[in-house]
Amino acid sequence: MFQDEAKITVIGGPGGNGCVSWRREKYISRGGPNGGDGGKGGSIYIQADPNTDTLSDYRSVKKFTAERGGHGEGTNKHGKNGDDLLLVVPPGTQIKDGDTVIADLKEEGEEVVVVRGGRGGYGNAHFKGPTRQRPDFAEKGEPGSTREISLELKLVADVGIIGYPSVGKSTLISVISAAKPKIADYPFTTLVPNLGVVDVSDRSYVVCDVPGLIEKASEGKGLGHQFLKHIERCGVLLHLLDLSRAMEDGEIKSAKLIDDYRAIRKELDAYSETLGQKQEIVVINKADLTTESLDSVISDLKKEGITVHSTISAAAHMGIDDLTKHLLSVVLDTRENQPEESEVDIVLTPHLEDDRMASYKITKEEDGTIRVKGKRIEQFTIMTNFESEGGILRFKDVLDKIGLKKAINRERGGSEAKVFIGEISVDAHI
Image (cartoon, rainbow, N blue to C red; front, side):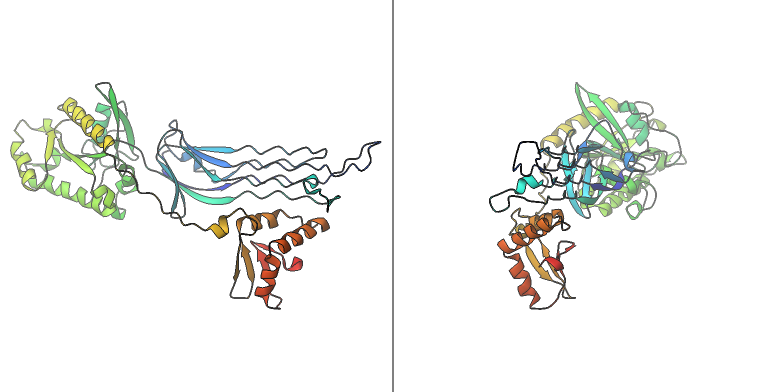
């Protein structure tokens, strides 16, 4: 089943706990601590893979967790690092965190780290020193990051074929490529976008047709509105007009084609400015339905500002070769002159992202609660084993050295206000 949107939760693997261990061997005195460090938790990567063309893998499974790191062991044995988890998506997938675009994976092999695994905790051997010769504590492993992200697929094609339902889009794509879409003479035959590769003069380009558009499609009417996003990335739009819709009692009503054209253009403009400004080639399809010249019809459309490139019949293979050759030249030109996408603004928060322990921010909430934020200090706190007396003493020592204890007490002003570092209560240790 074709699926172009998904929401999933990704969780980095937790780091392994450090080990508390002592070297105890016969005839060796003062063996000292030899607890090994825990392994790092696995991270989660998302990669663009051309072997998949849908997000249906994420329809039933909504939570993905990387492998946790192994715990440290005695004799300075380091825990095993957790394996990274690789998720694959079709090229053209945007990854979002809320309204923020994390990555836009357009090309094969492009990948991004969406969450990182937690750091492994240090074993007690790590803390041995002149002033702490018998450390009886180790760090806990850091939990992996958790993130809720949305995946949104926008097919990457050179040419997007648009038009009313049953104008011949699926027939055309089946004629010019190896794609085999469902074709019938009733509206909304196409329920999902179809991709096809067109080969011309040892070159190739990709075409995409979407379910037929109707009036008010941009407001959610019909089926096409669900797939308008797929033609936002096309370099050029091929706008098919259906001659059969303009034939009444043996006569061709140019006004009907003009109305159809304007109705579709209105929906493109309403959906997004990007679509409204796309380069467009207008073609009249089903020209085999009449033996009369269409010059007068083409002239009528031109007077209304609609330039018709050619008349074709996809079913009868009329004018197809000339059209595909013209599209190739347009596609090659579009590829060379593709405008660079604007860079996403990045908001820097050095006081929160800095890896130094002394980089933090203290805030006082409405109920008087004092909360400390900072990447390294939060990591340090969550990895401290508060069930160990040695771990608590180290925690207090670090807060003293970086001046955080003094700063917190200054904010407290002698009160018994609650104190949190990140989401962990540290009232008892200040």
